[in-house]
Image (cartoon, rainbow, N blue to C red):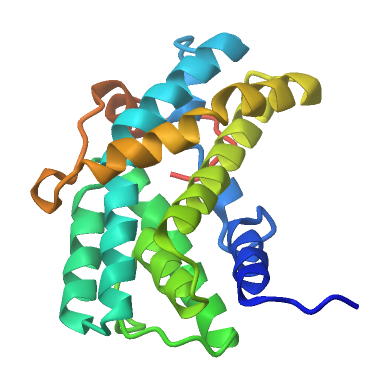
Length: 226
């Protein structure tokens, strides 16, 4: 049997961290996508692709990835104050109750998981915790470098969003796989965009996303959480 190297171990941990089977509830949130489909803004796979591309490049790359980088840096230096500030900023950047709940509910679930895996988590467990910050803490614990972690984080986000679209548009399984293949090349581009974001520039303002997310909070019939 071949020996597992440190690189192999980090890659396996990244696969674990990015898996849709990770019990953090990412499948339960559509992040405004359900409202956008229900109201007719999105009707087909091409429009799903355009929606996710805009969100990926101008929201996730502008907010989540820089926060992930900050969290990993703070975790590496064991700077609890910086981690707390990063956590507070992550939650403050969520424009609606739904988007904040997405981050904090998944953060709460991730915290329980880290405790069960005996991983160090320096933030107060009773606090409202950001999923993206805890994702970074877990990756740092497992010695996964930031670019690789960012790619795994993006893949997890994209897969959950496409899964939501598959149920809601609806899309067939083949269309869903085609959509994933079409959007995959944007992931390195999103990481490059995030690298240019300074700490003072973290945050995004996609009005359509905010309106869709706010609308989903009072949507009469829905499959996903608000």
